[in-house]
Image (tube, rainbow, N blue to C red):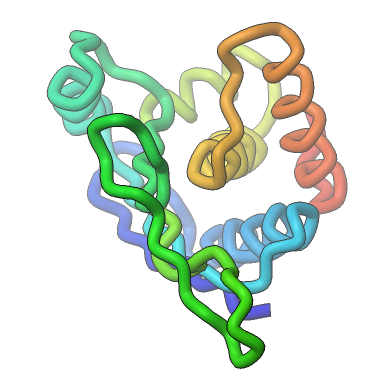
Length: 165
């Protein structure tokens, strides 16, 4: 499997260990495998509330911090270009699987939520990361049915990784 995680920790308020990034890389592989994906790249930025607040306001017109934002590179809407497809050796169309997109997580929100929910910071960061990844590949939670599907997928990956509540 060739999924790649590029990451940066652009905040200093919450300690994120380098070893935990390895856990996030494993979560990416597990979540991708569960979706039948073998290729792709995800960029993760861990930021503070101030940075995610600014991004939330700029891109979603919501004037408050949030826990996670996802920006899919292969998403298609009326305002965006159609997804580009590569052609394999047998001239069949297959989806382009390069850069999947960016995930931005507020470390401050993750810490606060982990305390509110009574589980570890690592579990909360893992949850937010998998949640963001699922958004990158097209999942959403606009109604109860789609939220249930997304929740089960997230929890299955977290259970597999041992990041339970």
